[in-house]
Image (tube, rainbow, N blue to C red; front, side, top):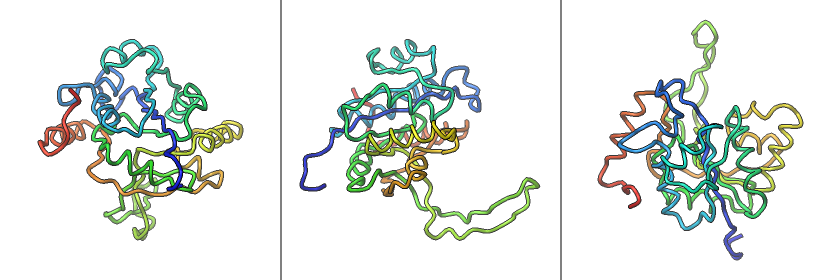
Length: 238
């Protein structure tokens, strides 16, 4: 692949969560963090990357206009999502069509997106079906039963924690989603890589370059605000 022209890559930012655990009263993508809507931060990372030729944001149905205004997007860049994350990815992929050879999927809840990581994951696809950002596990994993007692201690060697962005050959990701829909297992996968893996596709792992925090709890908000205020980190697009 290195001798061929770079493949066109579109980005789907999944921002369909309603933020129940956050108690913000608005979709998580619009939740204020460090003075801006949460999703606005990761959009900066994409705008700094020259590798993304199309960017769309998938939001909860009924919030399209609100997200357009809050995130500074054109109406055509915002798409209504489904009831689950997997359905929202499918909505975004259907909206994009087949104009791009690669599709990147990123969670809006990860505001610390580094444009260098975007490039690294795109380049990491190579001849595989896809590539994902990930971090090696540093804690000792335990399998715990319903009684909250440890059932098994797992060996952490070779275990990585999947993150986003995740990049895939568009046709492969579409086929993986179609197969999952047909077999009624679309929502069994916790990320897009799992869907591709289920149909035998190979997925490469690219180490995250910087903290790539996912904002899930109120405590994550405080940590993200500290990291976003770091003067050594790139600031918002002006």
